[in-house]
Amino acid sequence: MEKLYSVRMRAAVGGAHEKGGKHISGGENLAYETELQEKADHLIKKAFLHQRGKPDFFNLVIENVKEPVCCSEPLLVSTYNVKDAKDGRITAEYLLQQCGLTNAVINKAFNILVSNFHVRGAILVDAQTGQRLDNREDQGVRVSQLDWRQNDFKNWCKFHELHENFRLKEALTLAAKVCRHSATIAELCWSDDPNYITGYVASPKRGYERITKMKEKGDEQGGRVLFIDPVQDVDAYVYYLEKKPFMIRNGGEEK
Ligand code: WAQ
Ligand code: MG
Image (cartoon, rainbow, N blue to C red; front, side):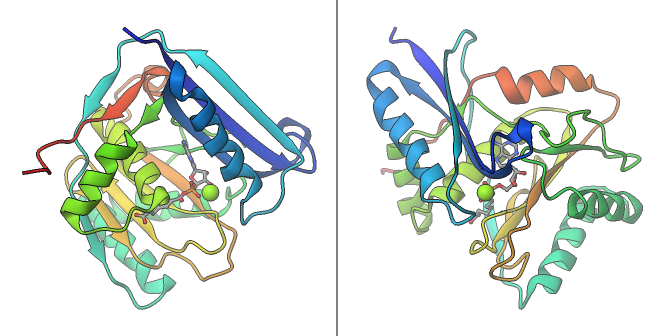
């Protein structure tokens, strides 16, 4: 068996993140040895061509994957075409209610998100109380060790008549990993890239629901919240997100 590696990148401007620099971009994927160069190149391009600015700090970590890779199929995708960002956020609230979350919890989570746009990972929120559960402060939890083979993604896009958009690929891979865990109730996300305004709500119950406008064009504020079942072990959940290798397995598109 060829060895598999986890490749992770983070980039900032004004110094490293831990020295107060502004987060520009992060990225994570999985690579066999023969693909390391290509996957590292992809992450360098992602960081240095980013709309949030030119980084002066770039960190790349390559580690051997030690655990067996877990897999699941892509989530079902649906799209809500909304007229503006306000309508988009109302739609997101409605979809989160459909996942069983109360208005109080949803409001608290939105407040946490909008006061923590600088956080570079996901914020974990108790699905019952709306309290923040991770103690990662500005770091949040980066979902890592995940990938979707480019060719599989390509076939999936063709089958679903969607453009091969790398953001969709990354977000859908992350959401599939997150929703595979039994503690996940729902995820809320929109990008911190100023020109990308589509966001989504994902859940094991309803799949991946895209919302075409979650903010105004030019706005650099975005983030991610994971609503989790508080009876489960938070440390084990974080371990799963950061350390368990995950790959999307699709198939059957080429009939
Ligand atoms: N793990 C945890 N949180 C992350 C990760 C990660 N690997 N990557 C990004 N985040 C957090 C971080 O706080 C970012 O500020 C925020 O999420 C947004 O990340 O068309 O591009 O990578 O269906 O800018 C969604 C819609 C696009 C795609 C989301 O997010 C579509 C997007 P970004
Ligand atoms: Mg971003």
